[in-house]
Image (cartoon, rainbow, N blue to C red):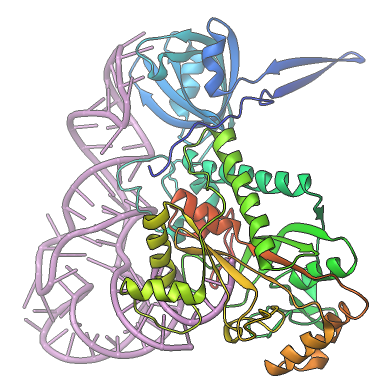
Length: 461
RNA sequence: GGAGACGUGGUGUAGCGGUUAGCACAACGGCCUGUCAAGCCGUAGGUCGCGGGUUCAAAUCCCGUCGUCUCCGCCA
């Protein structure tokens, strides 16, 4: 187990099950309160209803133990032979079936956790076929089930409690991100995924049939965020899907993933964008720590930051091979994070001042060093989680930079139009939350952090 | 797009020229009133991804093919 924490999910988690029985012309509603496994200890002596999955069965002749699992945890139920009906049903059960058990809660030294439910009635809500295609509970030989097989049966894979924790972390992380944005005058927008043309380049976009036309799936909401700046919204954010047609076979790439994006106006440089992102991330990590009682490092601000030139120099000093000037290889990203961690104890590091050669035409350039851009990447534990920049908002300069990059002006005319009628200086960034979750929890792949991953080969389930 | 690796019962694996293809877990049947990675006894389940070749003999060697994974490029 690489991480461990206790989730706080007690609030509002008592569900009601209504049984409606018509009697004459009236309807009588019985309300039976469902109790969650982890709350059993607060109901000693009471009769309760548990509903969940059969986690494990242990037949002991005249006594049967059934471990029942719900979203809150696992608890033991006991079925005695003297209760003939329940005993017979339990004898026919298969693991991973969904059941309802009513009974009396009792303290019992011999029970796991010191608490158990003495079953009075067992009802099968949905029986599971006995032969599971992949193991659900930890058992011999289940640790290394091929990820591809697990993803084929993702709904079984996710029954493992620690996998649900991944989504708890993401949920709180994203809530923290939103908390910061909402408290700082950002407006939420949604941008379309269908586009009439590629947002840039064209080699990495998905082409789709759109009635009698061709359309493309957005590989970034960036142009639309910038339109929002031209619209005078000043500060916007969104959470949404992003599509990349890159044939990338790595543990950190997918063809569709969720992006967090924000953009803000009236900035002087990309450093203001970076400062904003720092605060969002701090807020996110704080929320995960506080809500999930999770022992994680909330980063201090400001995050370490160095220019590409400084990064290259530092890497050279540590004997890390330089593959390509002006950009970092994955190995260099890992090593740079490692070096910064040793020097400062920090998990995050900004790299700024990328040369124009490795950045798109719309990144603004440094006034005193026109061959460098006002852009940055943010690395977290050796993985790139953000690219951001101050954008070039002056139409004439934008067109000149596009031409320099060999971009045909006709293809970006709609984009350039955003800047023709008054647009404030602005910048923003795109964040990959899946990568943050992956690095935070030490997962083997972003796909593990994704409910239903999509990669070059996978379109199902 | 480039490079490398791996496909053996449901899952994880051993075997790497001649084995009735072994083991663990899961499954099925039996015994057991305190199990908790339960235990004990028994049963079933594999044309070793697919196709071709070499050989007296192929899970094992060679070629092709399909599937999967990893690294690089690219990126969030």
